[in-house]
Length: 504
Image 1 (cartoon, rainbow, N blue to C red):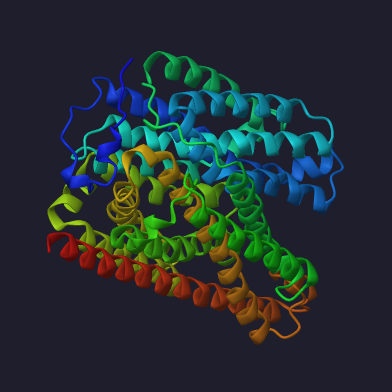
Image 2 (image 1 turned 90 degrees about the horizontal axis):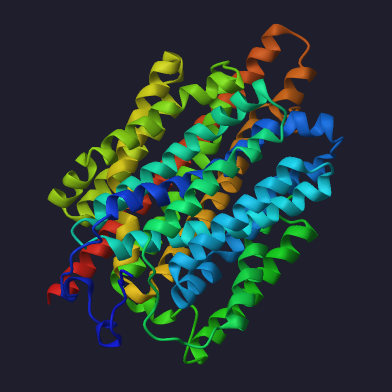
């Protein structure tokens, strides 16, 4: 069995001091296998959205049922990311990858055959457990099988698969619903999961932390409850109101539980999350930048579909097709290795700053070039894709390389948790900016654009409502652009200081 573990004496060494070792002989084939597993999980983050009308009609599902069908998956997945990463480090990343594929496949089977809302919600929660295991172990395995020199390009390909999942989820869902019943969007996961299981068993090497620390069961419980409560508060804010009892109560639970989690982790000798990571300047810089970047991008891309449908007038499938240039740009630059070469030539801090500046320029293009129709949006999508291809893998590598190799699973869990937190917060906050701007321009605008259009009694009034919504989208996209640019500059500055400190 191919082993990528490190000795305890290598824990404290910085990444550049680690002795060079050859990568796994089948590392690129293994990367293809884990990217296939990753793509399946990412597709399921968005594929259900297009099936909402079918589920409402065929299951007689209430609005609350639909919300839980969507949220059960994301809540369980985000709550378990740290725990899943810690379990992978302790018990073996290959074992957890196999367990994740099995759970995800079993949940997909139950979801595809469900005949009630309750069964589908439970199945989605089970898929969330499998998804958490897959998202953490795939990135951890990448860090184990590739040499430090090859890791940036490998992470770039891993990141490109993330972009591909974002773009193709609605397209796959729309195609399946046009030809089959709604359950097919889940059953299509089964052959992929089966193929992934066979490939993982045959190809992926086992790796885990060299020391068997006692499992941090209380830390796992506290982190799961705290993160799930935090994400639920963020998701519920726009619907129930940020000052509602439900949102404030859930947020208070999250703050208290996560505070207890931090206290507990600082007191025990075998913490699931070593808080000393945050004394590492490289780690802190990458984390601070990642939160701001995912905040801006998550919210802005959520608003992009509304921009394409409500402002430019495309249907759902057309809108999905017209987002493809973003993913295609990321895939082309990362699969070809051009983005990795550019980042290596520039160095990490300048690459992050440049990538985020280009991404911000893309968001500004989408927001301000509306009068040019899809041309301005296309330019923005290509710029966002180029910035993502250059900057995002460098950011992920900065997080992962600042953590000891035996904690790669926890590092991947931190990276995933930041993405979930930033995306959720971005959707909530930028959505609130949109609604506030829209309500200020159209005081009688009910609660949404469709309601305002229905209340308009003339073509002129409907045009004014649409223009007000477009103005709200513009404001939100510009806020997202500012957050992305700020995140890039913060991360670049802190990483530059870390490099100087290491040099000294």
